[in-house]
Length: 198
Image (cartoon, rainbow, N blue to C red; front, side, top):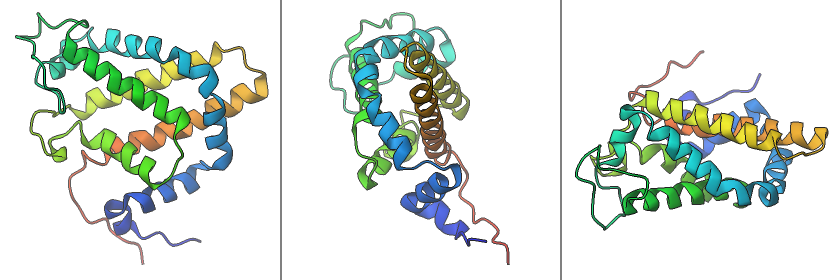
């Protein structure tokens, strides 16, 4: 039986991802499958981004988080929820960020910098990233990740890949998105010291 330092899982994100990857079986073959999908998925990113924002704008509980000024955005902000449209320059700014995120998933090496980037995706949606404005409830983050996971699955199933490649790609993205979801959820947990079995 392999020993896992449970307190280190909470303090060392690289160790955490290494453990999760090993546990789920997320490895080089999965990363290769994800990277191999880039030529198919990259052209579809704008459509995926639009689908995500159509969904986010369909509920006041998710749309309201786009009214406050977004980190890094310097332009005008919307007056209120009703006046905010997808054409607003702040939403265009946010869409560019989401597009870069999706492109990063299929192009970047899965090294220490990528792990830090995936971890920051969770952190920036909470006040822990330094700004008190973004404070998206966990239920909304989980809803979004579930929608994104299903959209990616539907997109892969629509590519017409051979069965072996399709299965390999779907399984790889499934594991990746569970990793991402953990790196989101960890920023919502109350600080605690886990009990370590003797």
